[in-house]
Image (cartoon, rainbow, N blue to C red; front, side, top):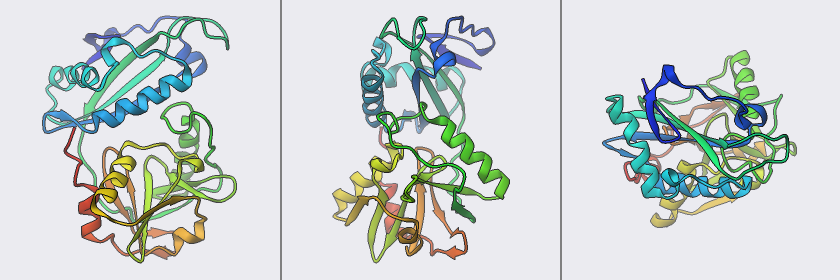
Length: 274
């Protein structure tokens, strides 16, 4: 398997991260997960925008190879081609270069991109429930992926232990935030609902696409802080991330109808665009 490390294409077995490494020592960085399919990367501009925001929040400077949407696509497209993958899931990890303790010594980044085969899974989620052991936390970095990854690791442990297919995080006040690795949406009387970023949810690339498509189609939608009971009163529920859209059939004891096909068609309308 070939990887990209600081712009160099090399065998995964030869990777040497070296030390000091602020990514390992402090989690001083972030990551993006992208999907390659039909010979292009999905949602490149949205990924790049979130990367810019994360770099600004962490006071990092994106390397030239990743410093625009066009550069990001050109750089990362090397990976699926080098590994002969017609469809691939890519992970791009960035962390601050250099050493130091809590006070950083540079704004420069090191980065690593890896890939694996991608198979879409849009199958319905049979059983879900609200997390009871972990809450989402709104912070200056909660919009991006990486700095709060421990939340999702804890939630995944709880999901496994409870025998669920999906788990839904809420903030400490009980407002719905997101699923374990996806944004969450629900429909009530034809209106589309999703938690606002103030709930502590990630500013998901697919979340942004669904809302953008809803605006373009004139579909009424509401972002806000909603309690569990408001979500439980929905007609239908679905999750959305860069990899898939999945209907949720049950949360706790409450069963839901499958989301209207027109709505799911709307949500997938731009999934093939770069």
